[in-house]
Length: 454
Image 1 (cartoon, one colour):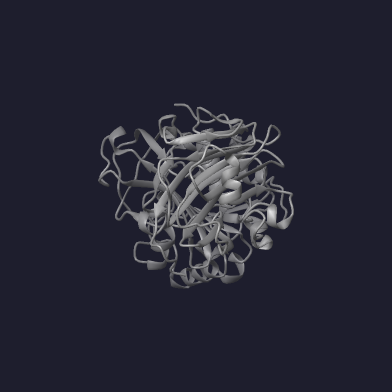
Image 2: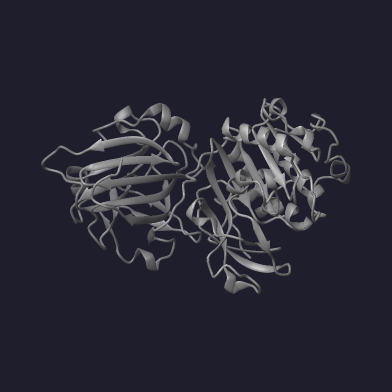
């Protein structure tokens, strides 16, 4: 198995001591706050009550979350007392982690308090058997995304990473091979959640979801954020750096420390999937180039030039792609320009959606360069910093263009220039110059009706 070398420092720490493991659970509504974390006011509650099968990895999981909290600057309380689920107590927490809970663990009053917590902007993280919980509580089933059905024996399997921008999966290669207990679900959640990773059922024995087998996902739900991973059965998982970073990223997104597009994503086809073969229909215009790394990332080199998709003129579509800067770098995504090996043709005949942290408002990240600034307040709340991945959606229908950053709509623009048109044209990625290093990956597109619905 090869995983990316970009696993953050927080998961390189040694496995926590036996003393911490022993102190991982609390009997009362809130655990001791002397957890070694750097408390800047943010708190996470780990809830691990079981009314069915009990996983012997729960103490390891609690210790791992405490360790991650200490590294990421949030305090961690842990409990198995459902009495913690009161309106006042839940309000103290930025997220609640259901760690391999099983069966009916909350009564009606506690359920109502948790529903109110989520609807008031509280957040949920479900780990492994969290989907084997509260089968008769409709709200919880929607929040978790799916219910557990069965599993084969613990074994080694390949996981296809579908979203490599979300902080829970950005550190992974497209193929993640590991050993775990692999859950099947009563329903496929893909239509109503954003799938982050799925199991390759051909890589192991006993999968029963007909080849489409989500195993980790995220969503916005009833006012809160919800991250779920079916992984984490074994004690060894919580000492595994790649899995710990997976869990850390899910919590970081849930508490709002990182941004990601967690809207359901269906019907897209790849224009660039990280392989050299998928670049067959792309052309470099002008000086410079893009370097393709082993992990499927394109990074700008030199310039000013442009890598453009020559396979097809595009009319009404949703274009999604992930991008990352290393610092105060400059690049952009061009749309609506005619085929040309001159990069200035895109500048003169199309529109650029800018990537640049520090330029003027109409020339900074999210702007339609030189024509319309983004909503800067919304943009700033949605933007991840240099070194972390962001996701653009650029939606073109007729002469109307709308732009989302990490799932947040930040700009809308209508072309009125008779010399330009968004109705037909090509798309391209700019390599701005020798001092600018911007990376792209997972470029995908979905055809849309010619008129926007809203």
